[in-house]
Image 1 (cartoon, rainbow, N blue to C red):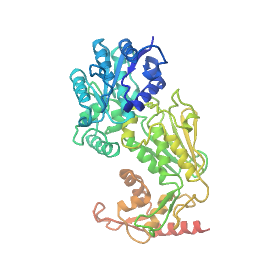
Image 2: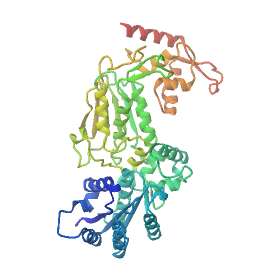
Image 3: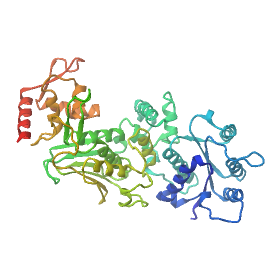
Length: 503
């Protein structure tokens, strides 16, 4: 079929970035470019015609009109009407499908005529607000998929926008949504107020389909996401050698929301790589330096969890070897990207846009389309080889570990280089407990584990089960005064590790 023509409105300078981003996304996304062709006035070659005739003729001939409304009203003709309002009038008169997006939440800052236009639009159709360009793309994506389904051009949307089979709103966690709302407001100025209802949040993020939660909603806020999406888990393994070999010294399968998966997988890696700890001579905080920067590990794991192919039975795998970190996900690159393009600034083409947007709003994704470049830069800064990217039965990111000292390491006691079969985080904790008893929160901070439930279940319990630590109030394990101290077995392990590191 012939692609449907989309007219992207407004020649206002305040929308220059958004207009180009929408055009590039529509042309690069595999689904969008199959059905749509965007029109931008900037793409029109020089011609002996008046500009207003050209863009109004394009509105009259388009299938879908996308209007962007901001603060400025723009140039006014002899009748005091701006090009943006003229476009909207023509689109309305010609009965075009109108998709209107309003930038920002504060209407008081807008030109009086723009305020009037927004009110007029609101009386005629449903408009959507946005703050960031990525939020605009996600909103347009949902609207266009809905258009295609309504016109029976497609019967199923992308995975993350499809209703989660057999799931209801009762399967979503209200507290998780409230926590997300607080984080998104602090991190990116998310426009909804903290008192917004879960229904308002889900609607704003396009996570509902006819009142049913989508797959993205379940992955983001589900009480038990794996009950509905079995393969949405992360498998983490630590090998002391350079090959996959049994027995596996440390193996974990993590479940939960995508936020949980990322946090737990990052904690797994950070607890097992070398950490150089300094002294408090320069201030109250103890300086630390991981052999692989946390942001590099986090970016690589987010890049595996967010864009993966959730229709595959495979799971994300995080494997830490003596010489490298490998992260594999079932999926591949979008057709518009190549392995070489990943090493340079490139457009963001999220495979699961409704999943990627909330991750961006909470800063799990820092900047759309620049993550791989940031990983390369940070690895260079700490003296690590550049990360390697490959496609082999999935997408693989390989980060090489650096042998020997870390460039720019802090002075002080080295607690990370531990020989033998004991994970580095164990020695860090035992060393911290060698001078005084510590509370659970203090041990969690020393271990480098951020996810509290994971720390309790997989780390603190292990220290107790192995007999390296013991409770100071054993008869009341849940006491608020509970602390933990080194046992004789723990002292022996710590002494052995210190002796080994000095040899």
